[in-house]
Image (cartoon, rainbow, N blue to C red):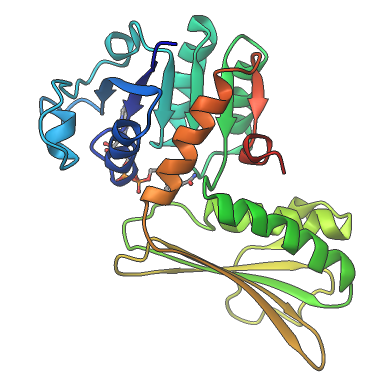
Length: 268
Ligand code: NAD
């Protein structure tokens, strides 16, 4: 069987570099191309050299169409508008599109999902870590078993992160809402400031901290009157997200066109 030809979007980014390393390290995958936005400092550099692997002969370009020529899959951790555009490319070319980008609006999410019914094989997740995806089941279970407990979600990320709450915090909130049989959008309280009044029973609160080089930390707190449960996940290295993304690409190879989550990849 021939290796799956991967294009890395946002190749010069924190996750882009981790994805280049993960593709290089994974049997069955080959780095076909890499690209970033026009003007990015990574453009024109060898992808392998930039990722600390030594030269691989793949020069980072700035033209997505050229980069996708001959590619079978895109691994894309970039920005919402870029992921929407790449999902459209993926649909017309019947590509695998692994989307790690967070902070998408409802409309952007919908456009990406639509590409799944128009010929692309899309796997989108706000968190590609297998451990975190497993944790979602625990949160769902805890929220269902302890209906009177207040659910609060606290997250911390590095000081370059541009969206809040994190995609992972929203996934955890959605899992808690599913456990309670409620709609997250109707019960989410995204931040508190000033004279807020008392906590609304049944709400799911979010708080976002930003600082330093924190890769990603999430706590789901279930607070009762006499006890507090905290379910915590700490990401220590972006390599774990990248390993999940390449696992998703290999899995998607054998799937029909459609829109999938990391839970589908892991069979959860
Ligand atoms: P980053 O800013 O380091 O990297 C983003 C890269 O995308 C940059 O190199 C940027 O130049 C590039 N880019 C921007 N516009 C582009 C375009 N038009 N074409 C090609 N490339 C373009 O950010 P990061 O820390 O790598 O995170 C990227 C995204 O991935 C964020 O949304 C982040 O929240 C998300 N993320 C998701 C997971 C997950 O598991 N799902 C894990 C970590 C980060």
